[in-house]
Length: 386
Ligand code: C2E
Ligand code: CA
Ligand code: CA
Image (tube, rainbow, N blue to C red):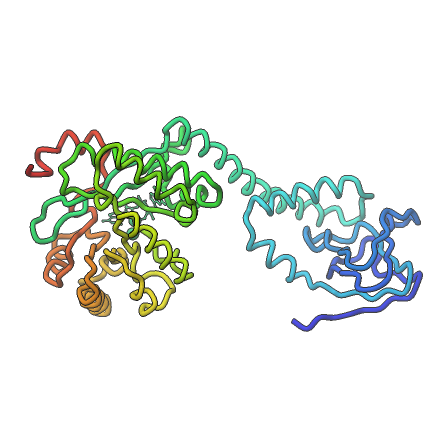
């Protein structure tokens, strides 16, 4: 965007109270006085490098103050979109905080005429504020839930396509909210990932997974989903190893799933995988085929397992292109020595086709939904033939 400079002489008004707030300004040179509307009282004197006129742009209201050049001034104009586009893209909590600060600040300034518009805008602002604040509240509730073990872990079977026996499980989190019921991990994991809470959720998951592993045959594995914050923490892998060692469990039985969306930075991803391998863990590419990374780049990463995303599986029988894609993934994975899991298998016909195409493992409602630890232990005899 070409930037636009404007020039004012000493004493000249830049805007008056009550005018439309169509831009903000950064002072390049000189000094500007901000005046209480219709009075000559100077509220602030601003100098080079400072921003003004942004308040009306932020809440789309008319000017509640006036601005006058104190000296010869040069101003850089900021278009409303430059501010509002960023604001709407930002975290709702930040939007809410800005809304709250703006309201406080406005209360200190003289009022201006356009009451109807101001009411409408303050209504809009309060909706934004509410959604931001409700996210804040949810975050606090999640913190309590983690500490009170209301965040549960369930385990979905991963089945060997050739034998139809359960080979392992994927650990999935559930939040039992006292008022909202079961909250999907799609909602609260994202929330947890924005803060360090994901580290705590992650510890709950791997502690339970390790506990379950210690009660199942040695051939059974468990996959856990790991987030970037966990992989970036120097404590993560050593803690896992220590917990496994305490229960005398081989690291190969705990596989780490990394989603394709985390692999935007290929170098970073390669480092993560290498560190996991050095510690003795197997690594799975989760939601394979849905991310934006180039296929070739992705295949240079030494994954042990590819988990083909549900979107390909759900229409593998109805869309020829998806069948072709699955065939291509199978052939690539075989050449690279990787194992394959098909996710979201819901029907027998899907299972049969995938098995015929050479996919190693299946996961989905066709084989079973996620189960609690106690359900698995109760069915131990039927699930495994040891
Ligand atoms: P995901 O890793 O792709 O997990 C598989 C999701 O597909 C699960 O959703 C599972 O319940 C669902 N699913 C399984 N079989 C079928 C099927 O046949 N049909 C359909 N339509 N869906 C099926 P869920 O449990 O809601 O988890 C959502 C996502 O949240 C997971 O996707 C995973 O990325 C993330 N997640 C869950 N728990 C954790 C966790 O403890 N840590 C981290 N970092 N992420 C987690
Ligand atoms: Ca997963
Ligand atoms: Ca997945």
